[in-house]
Image (cartoon, rainbow, N blue to C red):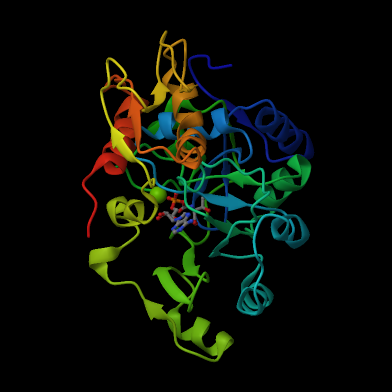
Length: 317
Ligand code: TXA
Ligand code: MG
């Protein structure tokens, strides 16, 4: 699917349908939202989501926002709350993201929420984004469409410059209006402002009739380490296992005998796609230690090793 440069799709019905078709076949499509251009993939397709991280070149897995065309579809994936209803009525479609508990049976990839039991969701206002999402029909996971460490793109050309052929197609919908990422509000407990944005705390507080807690800098979501510590597996994790000890639960990589194999062909995209799901499944077996084969420290392997070393870090208390 990847040639030397991405396809630039026109902002027409045909362009939106082509974009939706690429998403359906597991490809990556950059598209405009009212905030910034997003790098989209089918949120239910583990491999497509893994390709987002590969394209961005992030050294760790940051959970992603899932975009929907309509509220009914969105609600199928989360535990909806009265406060979510108030904020949705006031600001959707628009530059607001809500973090809610994920429905246990939601088919959204575990990689989207990096193993957390919550997901970040939003209904963007941009007409082209809505048209693609409507044509696609489901949730589209999309971080800002830039390489890790670069600034967020507000034109199709920014995306070309940053990602080039790492994205299959770009829907050129002109410059983004807002230029700043969406405001993120956590609603899994008391409402908390997780990331400031165009919609202010004061506006949100007026809508909710109460103030929001504000996450302090030291525990900012941009520091994934903080977030990651929430969901270490119950089992101990032993890394770089070249042989298995008796009684260990075995997470393999490559041609090894094991309980679950991240990728028998040593494909890092496949390994990333399986990572969180397999950690959960192995943890549910209730063993004392999960041993993991060595994973190469290159490309997506860096993010995989980052996640695994957090899982293996000494526990507090
Ligand atoms: O305006 C925007 O929000 C743009 C457009 C494309 O929608 N997207 C965007 O995505 O800024 P990204 O990946 O650059 O930022 C997503 C933020 C991250 O800081 C991430 O930690 C947070 O959302 N996030 C996602 N899921 C979360 C979750 N389950 N719990 C807490 N934070 C979450
Ligand atoms: Mg970003």
